[in-house]
Length: 124
Image (cartoon, rainbow, N blue to C red):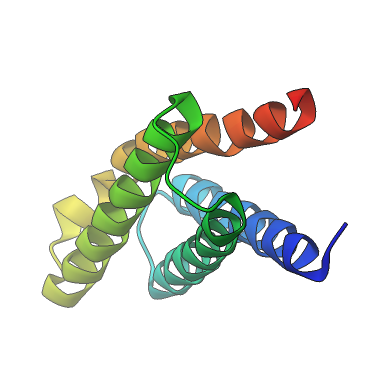
């Protein structure tokens, strides 16, 4: 395993851990809190870093299941994190309380992308 691959895998695992903790902590708290947002942003940064490193190693974007779900996963993760930022900024209680429903959907989509990459790399 090359150093770049190890770094890419480590950043993707960090993204998985941070984003999962944020989503489930928010769900159990029944309210979006600032520390959840910090973990959302951290997960997004690690995911984007890992994806960029993996893309550099692959050489080009692959229009396959993982490529498409991965691109959608990052876009939804970005939208989710930006929406959380705005929700906390505006302090709309109804949004802060119901935010976890959207979080679970985005997290589930992101997991499909994450694990399709894991399975795809194992099958190569």
